[in-house]
Image (tube, rainbow, N blue to C red; front, side):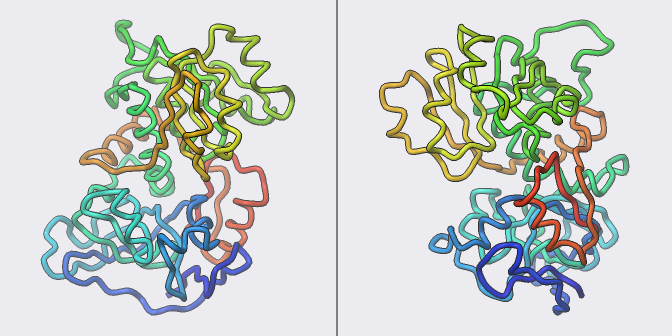
Length: 350
């Protein structure tokens, strides 16, 4: 089969599309014919070697975690799925097993989804059946971005609305879980932003999104009430002008941790910083500031992927696919991920 392979640590230039053996499922595992997979910055972060003390890689190494596809073979003891079922989800490559326990319990491991076939553990909340109304490419974009977005809302104390519940259309008006919150999302045009902005807006929060000028229409369509061009103004000064009382929550999807203390001056006293970017901020840098700081990670609880699928089907989570690539073009897709302005998610079709 064809797979996107790295033979050593590095960046996109370390990747090639090679012929490798088709992985076979062992006890408790399923084999999936991959239909689509989405890129995540963490794919390249792991490959760079910055996490090698925590997750040393074994080469050749197949990239990829988010996926949608069809079950093609069952390992011994698997009765949760049947051959031919359509599934989607996320698995961290086996070399990152220590990190996989953070994603789901039991952990979700894979041989790497940037390939024609991959093997996954069957007994995990990080894989679910794909409903017929959900396009496989859209499904492939949901796991990491959507699970991170759910974690952000919950950390902010904003419970996501029930899937199928109109967020502002027909039906009687009723209070929303986040309607008294003003939430600043930094880096809102990226993959996680494409999930967290509409979920916050559906919950009733007033979303302030940062992006480049060309992203304004896209971000407003996702549900942002205000868009701030971070290249055009001093972000802190502009937010203090617009919201002198301060904002309630700062969601960071883009800034390095060292930049967060200064940016957190836009928060009201008692406000919350929710960081989902790498590297994480040093908690000591916030000493004396009346804010709460948390790092937020994707985590798959029972039913979370089913919830994200329902949001996608009912339109709460629209498709945010920015570009599509063939598997043979995947190294270029990773180069685009780090070298160009990316709006939404990049998807590779196997």
